[in-house]
Amino acid sequence: MKIALLGYGKMGKIIEVIAQSRGHEIVLRKNSSTSFSGLETADVAIEFSTPETAVSNISEALMLGIPVVSGTTGWLADYHKMEALCKEKDTAFLYGSNFSLGVNLLFEINQFASKLIGRFPEYKIELEEIHHTQKLDAPSGTAISLANQVISNTRYDKWSLEPTQETDLKINAIREDAVPGTHYVTFSSNIDQLQISHIAFNREGFAHGAVLAAEFLNDKKGIYTMKDVLRLNENIFP
Ligand SMILES: NC(=O)C1=CN([C@@H]2O[C@H](COP(=O)(O)OP(=O)(O)OC[C@H]3O[C@@H](n4cnc5c(N)ncnc54)[C@H](OP(=O)(O)O)[C@@H]3O)[C@@H](O)[C@H]2O)C=CC1
Ligand SMILES: O=C(O)C1=N[C@H](C(=O)O)C[C@H](O)C1
Image (tube, rainbow, N blue to C red; front, side, top):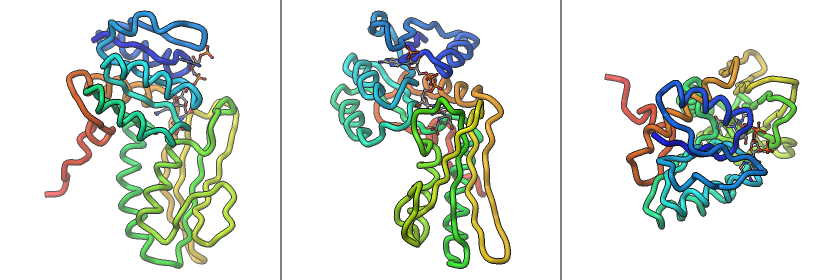
């Protein structure tokens, strides 16, 4: 498969290594100062750039009818525009706030835990994410995905970095040198605490998931998520 990398920073460089080890060819490595030359030859584009440049990068590929896997966070206010463009160009699009297997399993556990524990008002719910100091957005895309799950299952109605109402779900965003990505969801009462978490030891899980998503999207049309790639829609209980 011929892959265009839209964004060639920390993630783009690890994705390159994993893609090549799986027999794929990189036909474009785009950063802030290079052109889109070579994009037209790609079977699929993998986009990890910046919140400000994600929409233009994704649009450029979709306009050419090239399927796009996007992992950039902090641009989701425009998600519906990319969905519409994908449908108009009859191609494929997959966005994931987090491509690691571990976090996608955490999403399944959080869906269940928030539905179950959210029935008991004595438990207050809070989120915390810790990332490296170069990260441009806060809170993380993953924390927003986790928060949206809590909000759809509990009394909380919106997330906030500085909550003012009882129904605001607090997200604590911490920046520390060199942390690849840590997330906690904590359920606390006056007498005890339950907690679920994911701690990434490096960026390989994100990059591996992105390459799996690109392989999945190669022959598809439509809008997909990591649930489709990892077949998490299938009922695992007999
Ligand atoms: N979904 C997931 O699983 C994960 C998502 N992410 C997200 O991915 C994004 C990228 O992360 P990361 O690789 O760590 O960030 P980096 O800052 O290391 O890399 C960003 C890259 O984007 C490039 N860039 C800037 N402008 C453009 C442009 N106009 N067109 C193309 N590329 C451009 C930069 O180029 P230059 O160097 O020239 O400035 C740089 O190469 C972030 O939003 C992050 O939150 C990160 C990890 C996992
Ligand atoms: O910027 C990062 O590094 C990461 N970004 C993603 C996010 O915002 O959730 C995924 C991962 O946590 C690393």
